[in-house]
Length: 316
Ligand code: APR
Image (cartoon, rainbow, N blue to C red; front, top):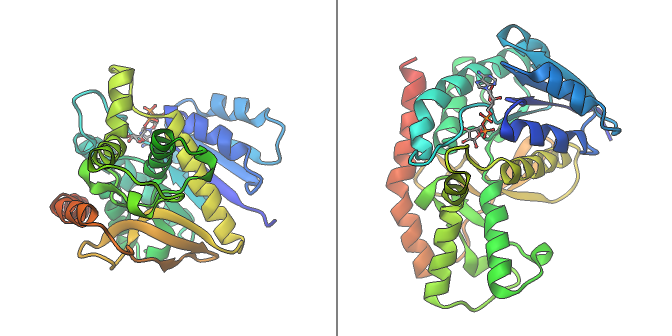
């Protein structure tokens, strides 16, 4: 496999540390660059002792961002503040928008060709923010910017398998839309293996998937949001992106990208990943009435979140 450098920005955080370990264990990664504004020397030293191939470097503070990013193929961004009980992903907006804009500016200057996988919430807005920042620097490539919605897929698979008594390893559920509340739409009618579920069960599974993040926020009772499952999902997606870069055939994942399959400019659906990033965006297939209604219902919120991101950069 070719040399591949991956950077984790926000590597000392709850998501970032676990994600760093998972990327250290990835056979596709040859260089792993860990960046944060605090504590990265310790995280990098710790991670570097794991006896896998990836060479780990730690970079701390703004003045080391350039070194962290130079030569990167994939940049994973989990930097930001996590959600506390009572906060929505949108409440995070003001803080995380500025953090993301600064980091993406670093990408534009140091590794404009890299794939960016965005984890920092609210993803519905932070991806459009990243797009606008990259445009300002004249380096935006819509095929290379992704919002990580993999955790929604992971949750939908877990809950669907559990409810129907399926082996979770054999289950697939496409999840479309965005990455917050009602903008998350699992398409259980297209899940495999298929299952017949009552309207009540279907509605409960849909809502549990949409509120999965809140379930964790409440269980953590003031100590943050999902970290282990989010890091797992972030590593799954980064690995898929790397397999695509390396020309492995048929890498297909649900992810939030610039898209024209609905009326909003960013949307998550199944996409094919190739050597240049996105190589194909798949349509939604046949939707049930329940799914069509849910799709219609999410649009105003998704559109507003996208506009909020775009306007944040325009007013910077
Ligand atoms: N550059 C780099 N790292 C930063 C910056 C910045 N400008 N600002 C903050 N960080 C780092 C923090 O120092 C911390 O190490 O981001 C990390 C965030 O870690 P946690 O506070 O533990 O938060 P976490 O639970 O990992 O969530 C981070 O991911 O899913 C989203 O909603 C979540 O937006 C939140 C983010």
